[in-house]
Image 1 (cartoon, rainbow, N blue to C red):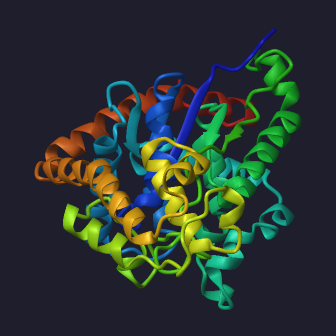
Image 2: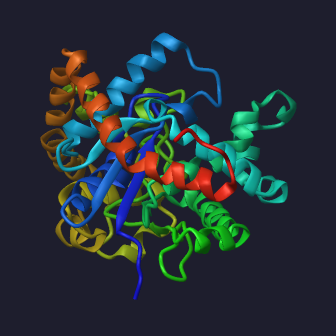
Length: 349
């Protein structure tokens, strides 16, 4: 039976320093997936400019995010690491998809409404059309699997809708040119990969809010650039409640800060929450926080150190991105040529 080549695509925006939520929710899984999949990991700088970015800061952030990928264990030899703007086919396919996607589909995207807020008239067209570019990022490589957070599931559904509509609209051209994969069409239906160990890390100051790069309080998050002392201070100051830790997971209900810290410990130590509570249940937060400080410093401070080492030589970072872009383009260019042929464009021979 005809199937698509199994390939993973994912990326992060270079809009601020990556934090513990990015590490546990994405990077640890990216590293593990290198063992089982062909992986393409992108720094999505074109997405970043859907809202204003200072050019000098954007350059710095692209390199910092790349350093975070590598320091966390993404191997640029085994996986492809590049920044999106170096592969022009992302923009080319996004335009085709802008013409395939329907206005009603984009109107349903909740993230645009959240990011644009009440002043939608001042939001960029790029912010509105962002999901079509995200679909292009994935389908440009015919990626079959996409590790995504819950907040991106709707965009992946749109990518699936665009792939299906393209396959249907141009079915005759695809078949005539022999460019389909059996009866599956030209583009695959990418599947989400939502997995642990801690896919949703919350703020250290408010357990009901997701840990975020945009939070005004730096104490709300542990940045991947934080040194050992900063990590320790932030955990010691993390909000808790006066009760002892429960012995069972059910006891975390209605205790968001407690659940968050237990989840962070579990994620960093490769355990379940139940296992953590089996060890610390019945104890006070002071003892648990001390253990969490030791664990977080052990796991995270080497990443910060490696990032500092990598960023001391930006030419090395740029070389990683350049080599990755060349490998990405080698996959993307033939697929984009086929798309142009299917759509009916006349290309240079």
